Image (tube, rainbow, N blue to C red; front, side, top):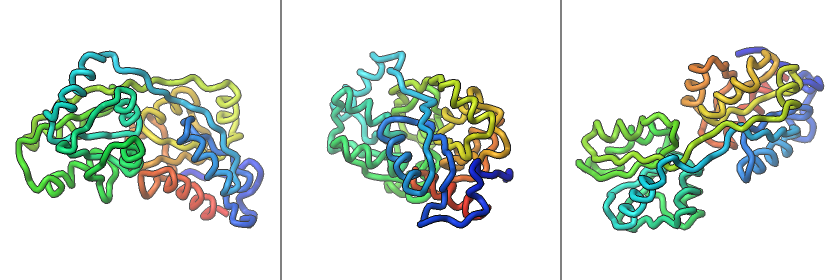
Length: 270
């Protein structure tokens, strides 16, 4: 792991009133409710969040295919639906998609499961350990009681690796893999670029391979003085493929765990 020091000299000083990130400036790469929630949690720990959305989501290029898949879903033609992100839930809601009670839903992660429930849908299984497509595959047979030949609708991002779809097909299931949305890069303000490159930011949160790509393209090379924190092992691997180093990885694939990883690093270097 690379060495890093906070801009204000907070490392080396005792934490004040449970504020282990006092003096830290942390780049939050997503906006919206998620970004606001993370910013609030960072402030509670003494940090100054810099909300600089690096990605956004756009409609799929093949809306007829998505609409046809959702019509089949509503008609009960699928045994299972796999949902890999909260953004996919947003797409379902925007189309007023109907998920029959007879169709079971696999959510890849607790955040995605929570989004499903909040939108009025249901989540039948969530990986208990590894909140990823790989983790779901590992638990699939037990969750489905070894059933064969299931009809599965796999909704995904245009750039997502088809780990889940390919794995389910290899296990003997019939999989319709349909793009629900596209992920696009968002240019950040020049001041954010300048602050990162000059080392005036203490930590950068990396929440997906898409974010890692934008961090590397828009902000890289990241100075060694800045802590780079990834939300999970898959994001760490994606970052490595892009040439972006990662210093710490969250124990669980959640915003809370990601912040905890930054806090732990700050305390370790205090």
